Image (cartoon, rainbow, N blue to C red; front, side, top):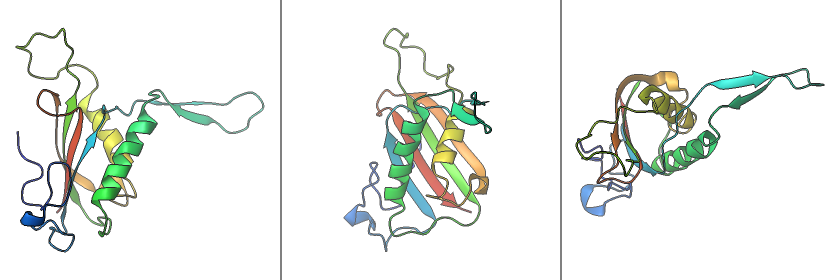
Amino acid sequence: MPDLFANDGLSREGVPCPNAGGTPQGRDPGVVAFRVVGEPQPQGSSRAFVPKGHTRPIITSDNPNLKQWRALVAVAAGEAMVSRRSFDGAVLLRAWFYLPRPKSMARKVVQHTKRPDLDKLVRALKDAMKRVVWVDDSQVVALDVSKHYAINEPVGVDVRIEAL
């Protein structure tokens, strides 16, 4: 598994490493890396309905845990962006999602081929970083993402954003 935190002056927890140029002045301004610990949630479909007596629709997500997950991502991203400006150009988003492994699953199963869908996980991640890391998620022009069972890693996601 590639090390998303290599050569950016951060530990795997996103904490500055004094011996690796990890001060805000010593970091590569074109790279941000951080980890979010918590079960990644997919961005599912939105539902809209107009209650009786209302004139405007109410839009809800079909995933009740999405709001909390997006808040976790936004906080971790915000901490990683301290003393930095938001990216204003094209970026590469790298993300490795670590999902819970069922205890009943055979050990020989290595690839995570079950739900949630990778594209929905990425959508939730990108939306959570809007106005924190970048102005709009349309700035993401390249992706390097994967999902895995959390075996030697905590459940969550490792994120690395690079300016292009």
